[in-house]
Amino acid sequence: MGEYRHTIDEKGRLTIPSKVRSLLGEDFIVTRGLDNCLFIYPKDEWVQIIEKYKSLPNTKDARNFMRFFLSGATSLEFDKAGRINLPSPLIEFAALKKDCVIIGVNERLEVWSQERWQQFINDNESSFSDIADNLFSKELNF
Image (tube, rainbow, N blue to C red; front, side):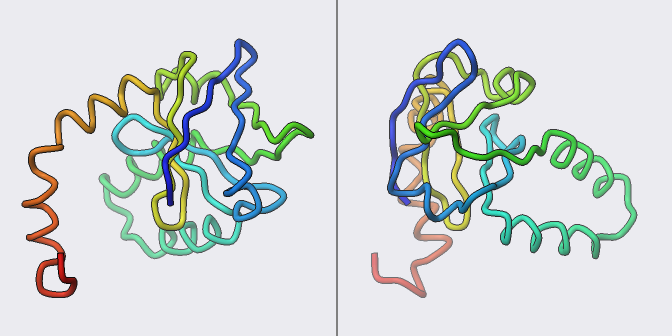
């Protein structure tokens, strides 16, 4: 969990916050995410996702989603400075320029361009209360 702001350099290197590096492990998977951001998964979580995908029916929707999600996936490691070197197709997909926002979402990290993250907040801010009511009001005391 958390929200962190870092910059990506001209070589595609992005520092991952030290607080979450250990949770990712030695190597991890980065792929296209939903809503035009990147998803970063620890290897063990990735293995579970792949097992779930193997059980999907062989429908056009399942095939198309797997193509989108898996074709962008790449295994990465940290350099000595705690950075990852993102492949250019992923940088282009997420429109990462200089300022990035890294957020923790359950079992994964998401990497957003600062502009897209701010747009997401602006577009959804007024509905978060209703969403929380619809999803959690009976289970949690908000």
